[in-house]
Each structure stands twice: as structure tokens, then as C-alpha cells.
Image (tube, rainbow, N blue to C red; front, side):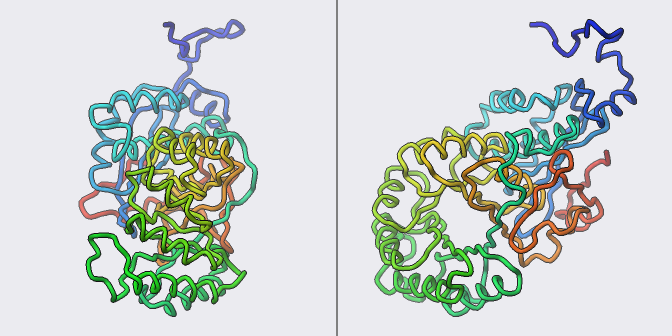
Length: 412
């Protein structure tokens, strides 16, 4: 197969390979030079409310792309192992490089888990640097946009999450003081009535405790906000169905992950047993993993976590499959501003987006990691028009909040 990067323009007196690094960098910054090579891949681990694995892809055009991999020990090492497969490649070949990494890492289990999350972080960084090379925002690379801003839902945590009124007070504060009109609270919290949490069975008093939390929050916010509730895969099939039925009289936005994620048959049965909307998807990898959830309508809303389940283009593909079954997308997200903005770009580019999660409202320095300000205002995230993700890492802030023992990225 010929090396298309070396083909000569018949109207030019040089090949793209003949360009000097300086000239190529200028052309690339103007969106004109596409013969660019990856020179390095680096990671830094930031100690956020989760350990955020930031990824940078460096090029010989002097342009750098930043991405993020879903938190978890070992991802940074996996990404470093993948770096040699990328050096010398063209960062614009996003799909080819994605599949190249999946194939190269097949022995490590590249259909799920930490390898896919590592590839996701690289893939986001490739979108960032490709947008800079082509001088377009990242949303343009995944199909253009349906909306200029994306709705953000706030994952809330009260002082005493087991106390219904404590949750209600926090819901009121987040709506009235912070301006959100979309919230989520946890239901897998101790009720004081448990006999054996390991069996996943909810006794009557435990079910009532969950209902009391939902009732208190929903009555407090009324029609001022949509409210979802997360179960974190905690309950048996029978208990999940019983709880979902008890919640049908309340205006619940959705009930998330009521049963463990492995058995899609049970997930489908729970979803189809109730009119309470059921959500799942953050623990299912790539479009292949999400396929049964969507084809069998085992969810009412699908919730992929973009830096975890495959990256920007893979999440776009998941959304396309979901749209075939008229299923909306609510992206799970516990990321730094980098992963959150990547999710916002994709959410802007798909018709069936409901909202993107924000998990760091109690972390005072979340927004300090980037130079841009006003990332989330009144529960909305504007999608930048600047090239790539439209964010600039504040390396001083990154250095301040790195996990102990980590090294800072090289500058561009």
C-alpha cells in the first residue's frame, strides 16, 4: 500500500514531507497543513474527587491535544504502554488509530475495562489536536451541532445522605443558590433497617426509606428541577422491581443502575416491569457492549461514560444506535473539565442528548485546572467555538493538585 502522506500534489513543487517543521507548524495552525506526526504521549494523574488521568498527545507541528481517561489505578501505565504504537502516526487518522490500539492491546483485554478507558483518553486527546490542526471545534469532527449549550445535571451529596430531609435541603440549595434544574441523589445509602446488605434484598422498611428520600426531594423542588436517583447496582431483581413500582407515583427523572450490570436479561426485565424510567450503561463498554441494552430496550435512557466506555466517536456511535430505538442519552461523567467538555462536545452533536453529569460541585478548584472561566453557568455548559476541545490546561494548577509522586507534562 502506498504511503499517501508522501504523495505529491501535481500542482505543487514540493511534497508535504518537504515542508520545514516551522512552516508546517504555521500551516497546521491555520488549518492548512495535514501532514503531522505524533511525537509523544504523556500522562499526569490529578488528585480530584476521583483520580483524573489526563493524557497529552504531542506532535511535530508544535500542537498538543489533551484528553482524559476514566479514573482507576493502572490506566496511566496502560496508556504509556500504548504510546509506541502512536509515535510517528498522523493524529488525524482517529478511527484507524483507535482500532489500531484495540488490536495491539487485545492480549490485555481491549474490549472492556482499563484498556478501553486508556484508549478513550488518547482518543479524546486526538480529537483535541485534530481540531487544532484543522482549525475546527471538536464537535465538528463528530457531526456538527444541534445545540450551542448542553444541559448539566448536578450529582448531589447531602451532609447525611440517609436522612430524607437532608437530601431535600441540599436539593433546594443546589436549585436556588447554584442554578441547576437537573439533579441526582444516591439511593444506595444505609437506612438503619438492613439485616444483610450482601444479599441485595430490600425489606419493606428499606424500600420505604428509599421512597421517603425520593418523596422529600421531589416535593422540595417541585417542577423547578428534574431529579434522578442512583442505586449503584445494589439491589436484587425483585427488590429493584418493587422499588421502581413504589416510585411510579413520583415525578422521577430516572432510576439509575438498580441491578448489577452483568446480566442484560435481568436489566431488561426490570426496565419493562415499570413505568419509572430506568437508566444503565456506564459499566458497558463500546457500542458492542451497549448493543443488547438498546436493541432489547433494556433501558429507557442510556448513560455511557465517555472517558470510560470508548471515547468521543464511540459515544457518538452508541448514541446513533440508541436513536434507532428512540432512546435518549444522559452521559455519566465524573471527570475533570477535560472529560466533561469532551462529553459536552458529543452531547452537542447528537439529537438525543438529555444532559451531561457534573460530579464536582463541592470541589472548589475543579474549574481552576483550565484557563477558561465560566464553564458551567446556570446548569448549562456552553460549547466552545475554539479549535479542539476549546480548553487550555493551567499547568500550574495541574502541578498543585497532582497525585504525590506524579510528574508534570512537558510543555508544548
